[in-house]
Image (cartoon, rainbow, N blue to C red):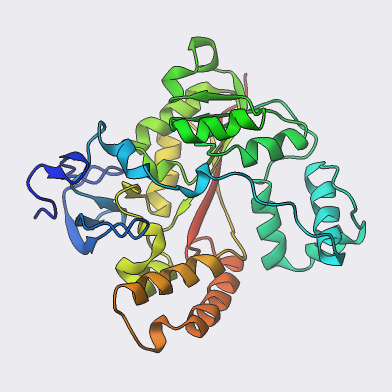
Length: 346
């Protein structure tokens, strides 16, 4: 079954992916035909569900030469940094928590913030995610792969990490350079030999793995580039989430054709171990679905769907229930978060 016009799409050629990119099995079920909701694209993309490991993936997908064209618009990570936040009592509590948790130096801050958010698990987990669960005061070399406009690189540097970014997109790199953020344009292979093996103390990949054609190869590369005892942090959409089931092909995180595959939790953990990581841990997500569900409902309405299922109030209530579940379960969150550690030197 093919959802494209032969071997092409509107911006180039396509590549067939008949087997699951994560487990290699050919047994699959069609999820349906997805379309680009970001640019009102007309290209149809066939989305599949792996019967063996529950990964979702595109077959066919844009080939390597045309894949950059899928990002040729005002992509979210290429935009300038957001305006400074307004000061207020809630902001001071948040900054108090972040200062204590991550060694930041935000001001004004309240020392009550750490105690306040420590007892509010859904919000505490959201703040821990904001700092990507990095250990406080450790420092060291950090690489943010798929860094976009450099927001997290700047944040990590404020946490005393010697951080820099890596991104293949020209617009993203330009945004980093305009802010004075150290960045390399390209892929892991463009970092230079000395920085591709046993070099980084931490690597972060926020919504990166789903964009690469070979996720398993990417995990092996990251393992090789980490110093002994180093960690990789990754966040990516969960194809088994409540949002994916509720909104179906309107779920924003399917994001065809940029999201080439969405690994399910168990196969992602197994792939990390296969890549050589000695300790792999999924983390709870907490509050995170508000904007995602509002946008998914909007996509559905833009595609002609009507009724209470896609109303704003439904999205808000569903988000509340989903976030509470994501506070206690790693499996049903709309975003998977995994930290994997390379074995320390003997």
